[in-house]
Image (cartoon, rainbow, N blue to C red; front, side, top):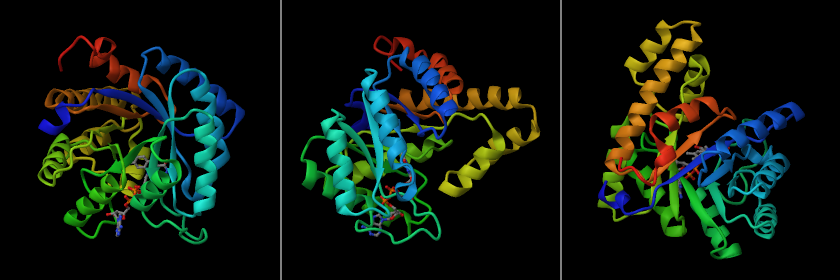
Length: 289
Ligand code: FAD
């Protein structure tokens, strides 16, 4: 973990772009509550194949213009160099300075893969088109990407993104801190020393967590799954247990030198803020973790 300790810690919250007026209003309330803790940035997801393009732009610019730096996610699957360049120009003109660059996943039955096949090609294209305008974040997978042929290749593919010009990475969520520590060790042995910020998924709903984790290849350890299962419909107990488990994991990550945390908020403030407060992050400049 030595490589990670040199970086200034940064804390961020991720949103998805709301579809309805009601969703927009709700996000505004969530944004206001999270803005109070002064995060380093917000980020906004981008639907596969460009399905949320306009909503992502609108949400990013709205949040960015309210004073907290906001990073759009941008996935290349289903896009062309021209459509991606257009997006980059819009963001550049609006003063956006950070992008989360991804391949994305094509929804089944939806058109061709696009001109850029993998995230390393997207990073390369963004650098070609926009130079150093953007700080580029890429995705990292401590438990490995579900489509990776094997662990070694996945690491090599991560290295390609770094060589193409990524500045830092945010991980897929995990509930096993050792997978992150081991991932960082492997990167260090390969000479890769960019900040790799753990992505944190607060636990609020068991069935959606299971569905989502199965899809993205994040493992819910058996002891957590069994405990959550035993609570049935008792959502207060699920949230309380989830809060404890995730807080403890974050404590371990930060104590070991993780360069910050990125919260997958799912457009809800409570769960992330509880973990935030448990960790004492209000005084993050003063405490040593
Ligand atoms: P890549 O880095 O391209 O990797 C994809 C797979 O291809 C891996 O198995 C890798 O090993 C392999 N691979 C990579 N390069 C090569 C190569 N050159 N040759 C052969 N194989 C290769 N999805 C969305 O749709 N919208 C979002 O907003 C979004 N935000 C995300 C944010 C974070 C922090 C994370 C971790 C994930 C996010 N995702 C999002 C999910 C992501 O799009 C999927 O996990 C997707 O399947 C892979 O994207 P990637 O950028 O990691 O792809």
